[in-house]
Image 1 (tube, rainbow, N blue to C red):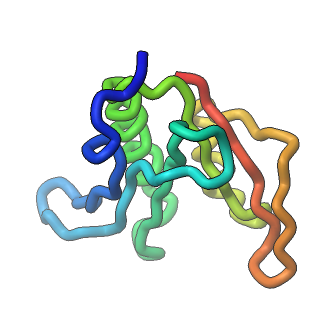
Image 2 (cartoon, rainbow, N blue to C red):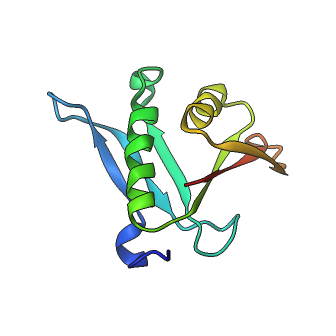
Length: 117
């Protein structure tokens, strides 16, 4: 199954806290420049003050559902090697670390993950 409309199946969504409605970050699908054409990348970023509260995992599960409904069969993600919290999120979501590593002396190596939907 191919995705229906690439213009509506990619994008970053604001993540808001229930109750207060304050924006605490974003999560979504972006065009992937690291993997196969047509296989997007999961991307998220949250304010430091809400780290370790499960927001990245919760938002990512919603985006994974969106990706599957949009007809994607595989997603990618990149995580800096030092970012153990995001590496744990990848494991919880069922992403598999690949052998690919993009060296970066300034910011830390990028590890490549993939997930079949």
